[in-house]
Image (cartoon, rainbow, N blue to C red; front, side, top):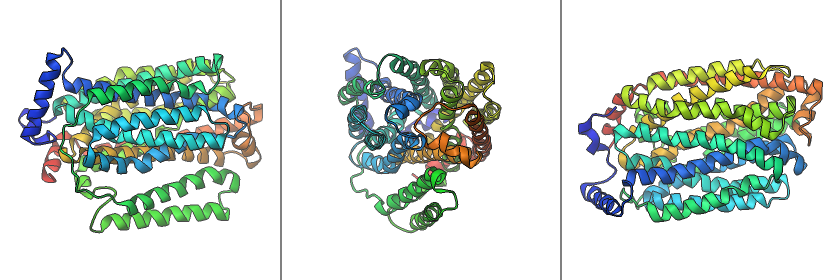
Length: 511
């Protein structure tokens, strides 16, 4: 935790700007409003709630959408991956543009674009159209994610950031509680289109609220440029990897198209690394990675997302396709994950403010590895308490990891590079998330006999017969075991990163 005397060193702008901020807070105080930091947190929290509700509802509704649109599981995975891929590709661009032209302006625009994308998704008439409109949602999501943590970091002093991040994580957890229940009720009484329509009123309120309540704190850096070549190489390689992992199920893992895509991924990422090592403008600012806690904290976040993000999807599909429960029943059965995370999240933030991020983050990751190994034991006849325990441990681990990791990484960033730092962290997290779905699908499919793969992954129905159900649980167990190994690797990253005191010195050195 930063000493009190260093608070001034992490303020995002010069003394006149801080004086302007103080005047604005004084004016809002005279109007009987909260301090600006809480106003900023409320707006970003609403955005987090909207995104959390959307993601949890969409995962729950995929089996119903798949049947209604007569699509297949691979296309439905792209409904999830398309959104995350788009937001991943454009996070760095929008983070850089936010530093140049104002992150509040970019954040508010993200609300509007996300709301429009939600409306278009509700109007989709096929799986392909739904994937396309999810790309629009992803653009808005990139604008929101690239700037939310930077807005919070600017508004709160260092000693309070962990608590602010913890409060923000509660919203994600609450959204993940409300989302499945609302999704279950929607799918029980309404059409799947309402899964997306619920975002529209939230988005309209958020757009208006953000426009009226937020103001810029830091000074713009209008002379900045953006590395378009780096973005194209990075995103092109990621796209090749995702296509290879998802389509390899039907094409064959050693077919010419699949091997060509894997080779394209390797080539483009090698060119990307070479490009970033040169002089000039960079897609990922190399100066940020001089901080050990920022570099290894970001690596830990990437691996945690890679290992964990597909778990919820696997569990939802297991409940509906293997256990045969309704969407509403599935929603209620997965609630312990979000409930426990909402309780533990703020505790993790407070602990990180007191003792640093390494201990709570590492313990959280080890708990998540244990949870994956427990969930890997599920079969078609497993009793619910086994799933309940696994989800509870998974939620506790996530609560202990997310807030400390985010607070430490953002605290290690130079104040005038908060937009880029926030976007860098979010980009790598999103890369882990989007790859998580494709990797889980590929590992699960590889563990299943070829004659059953088509029935599970390429069919248009989620109703599985007994042999197919058994094959799916075997594939799920393999995917969860791989997730456990990856999250253990993430725990090693948090140990190497160190604690916040070290990050202070590194951040000061690169200002």
